[in-house]
Length: 112
Image (cartoon, rainbow, N blue to C red; front, side, top):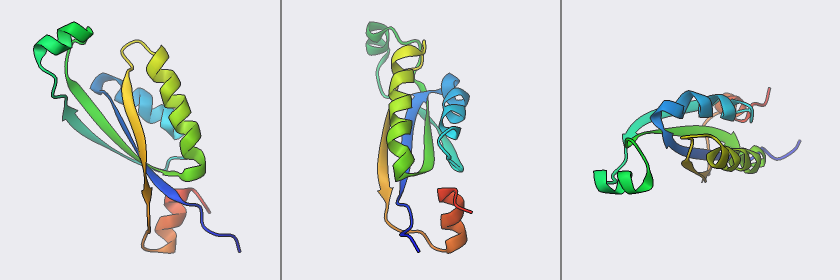
């Protein structure tokens, strides 16, 4: 029997109007669980104007992803952050140290 795949939480912070786009993109990396939190950036109006941003409404997408898929997902996000108009964002992973229950682990890791 092989060792279980390590899991990470992938945090993606994007403009709120691009949330569905990034949720769909992350679905290509066998992400079975995603949670979206609405957020508001802390930059003042002057800073937003200076950076050419129109608003500070953000979404934080939290995704459970296998470690072996995380690097590819981060690469795809980085590419989209550079090329999609209004699609800038920030993404990072945090390791999950443990889960309770085989069924939960199988669901999160997309293992049958």
